[in-house]
Length: 197
Image (cartoon, rainbow, N blue to C red; front, side):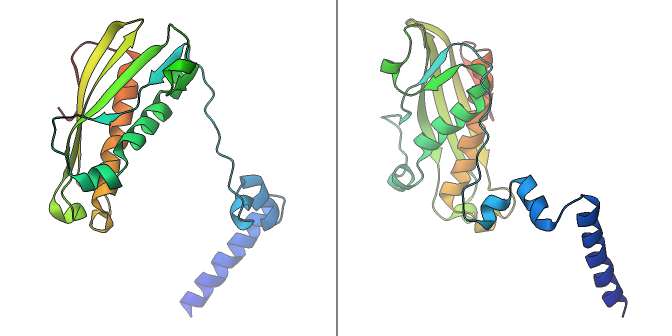
């Protein structure tokens, strides 16, 4: 009996909330922007307003030639593309433009070169232990080196790790590395050590 009263109270509270907001549930849905989900239309993604100056060129990220990284990780996890995208997203407010093609950038653009030096990514997801990504990079402008860095991040998968694969956990590593690199870009120094180093 108590459960019935509780359910009735929740329903009445929900109806009261619609009435006090001055609209119907559908109007509230329209105002919140969630109507896109109801109509199978993609919701517009707000783009951060660029408040920075200058241009950053992110060169295509590569794996270091002399390092051993499992072929499955190279072929399936798309770490290069993910890292580049995370750096771009996190550094967006620092630059007027961020591009990947140096030919379309002005001559005085800053150029970021990043290399994935090491990956510990044994198959089996969280069941095979923590995953790690180590990167190195440099920032130049007009041929002069503004700074260099080495960064490493570990992850054991976080919440619900048992349900995540190796690529998902490595993706968490490069997401955090993207934030680390973007923070370093605001004050580049020589031989900086970032992340879990």
